[in-house]
Image (cartoon, rainbow, N blue to C red; front, side):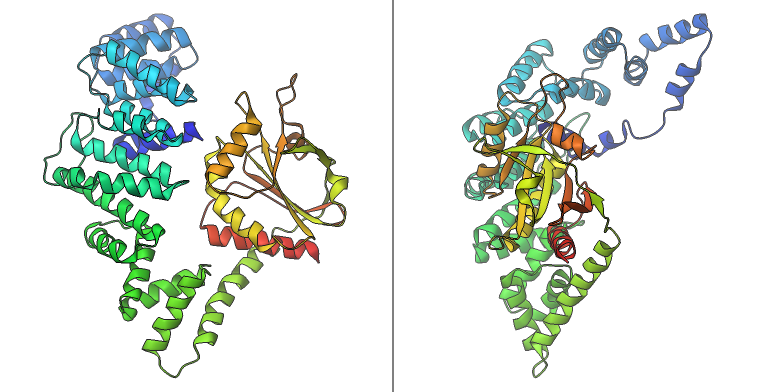
Length: 468
């Protein structure tokens, strides 16, 4: 998870970085294709004395030679410390860091090694590591070390988003505390040599984050105020902002504006009672005398029918391999222990970004069967990379208030493979298998994308089809 977080931060921090390694590089291909050693060495010599981009080209060329790659990285950072390529070279070591203490140690060494160089992104990464713990005091220490004001706001947004995932109240308290500081940034000019972050854009990004925290806390009046400000000033509105604005507008009687958005949300699986209630009020107000219940039923039916049609194309019928995993109390269970039940296996790991993104959907699906003894969900932690994976997994889930039935698929000490995952041929996580009461795999899906509501309904429909 943390590695994915770092990569995401790099891409968010500056749009230019997103294209660094995604396009073909003719110069690199030409260098690799050079057959003449004298000619190749001449080209390398020229690049060694060239621009930051030239040195970065050599770093890519020597991707498999750690000694030369490291040497050219150091030369790049020393000669062109403020270049985008140097920034990327400095950030790469953070990909190997697994905890806040390690990230903090790495930053301190960089501060000594590169005096006078802007390290705002590196400070943001350290702050985000502490946000994950969470240690908000140390998080804010590094946020406040960021020198460019707009970058400080950007870093704070990232840290707040991390904390909000498991502690909205703390994130909201911090957001409110720093609101006045953020307001002062709004009127400042853009700063920075490599990254020129727009202070106004960061201000409205922060307002958007603050509004979402208020909305989640149920503070509707304040949420409406800040949501409206964000909605009216952000060009590319995210889906949550649009949905929250519509919901809050409906609460304030703006039914004509809100109903199309809210109805679309229900049609796409937003079955949460408070949304359905607002659709009901808005439709009844705008269409007096018409059948509100039929209208809502039609919206929901369209969504469920679409999901059913898609799920039907994924149906398979294969023998499930025997497997053994261990529950959170150390008791071993196998396929035979669930004979007659429909079981949902979800292979995941704490470091897996798509796994974590899928959890709200999986919690929705699991909740649907909380009182159904015929269906069992097994959330199987695999491919661990920490010393105490059971404690890590328990803490990870409890901190985020997930009530999953946790099972462990530990790595074999000799092969370093997770045996249950191997038995199912898992190549990437999250990986889900729905097995019927006769021990047959009826569905096998991997990855995660889309909305939580749609993903949850897919799992539910898979379970229902497997039970037939």
